Length: 300
Image (cartoon, rainbow, N blue to C red; front, side):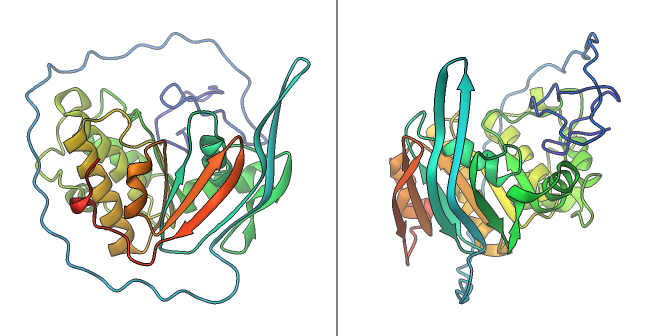
């Protein structure tokens, strides 16, 4: 079987994904079995290549519809109890996101932004409040319904790539297409992210930026309506991080995919359609930017 979050192959009796750590949440989830994991040694690394992106023509932004927003985060609370200590990861947090927007959730470490992203992705449950995505209350779904939601509606991009080391870039993306009902062609999405010449390369033969682009291609191959990105530039240098931000902005503009990025870097705010600022598990400010800056013009 495969992990419905990152697409990695899992043993039949596995309870956790060895690649991303996701816990199997289905009603028929297997019991944990301790097994020794072995990996084939990766090929020797090669020198990274600088990728060039063609300029993206401006497109007409979608007209904002009246009525409920695409994402409605309503008075959401998430509490963890550790012995006698109670930790409020989210404390009655509320915000909306329109379809086709690039939304940036900003906050320092411990602000609750990763918990908010996990709730949006159907990975974490809530203690109180509700979350609606396209009119569907995902906080009321069963475990099996959440699996279907994660497989077919949501794409995940992690800070640390989570690629399978003994599979090529193309094979890493192909795994995700086996999880979705309406996937895109793996070759198509790898071409979209500028890796048409690196499809047969293993992760160890790719630079950090190229590996992150493979992980974005893997998420896009599921053809999701919602793309959730957890600190996608956190492990990258300045120039490579800028390329990844440009790719995410282009994806939002060209495909209409709703993109949510969490970061602690406030310098990214001008490129977003909407900025949600969090502190101590609460949303203390929300800004809508009518004219987002192009990533190419951003400096930090």
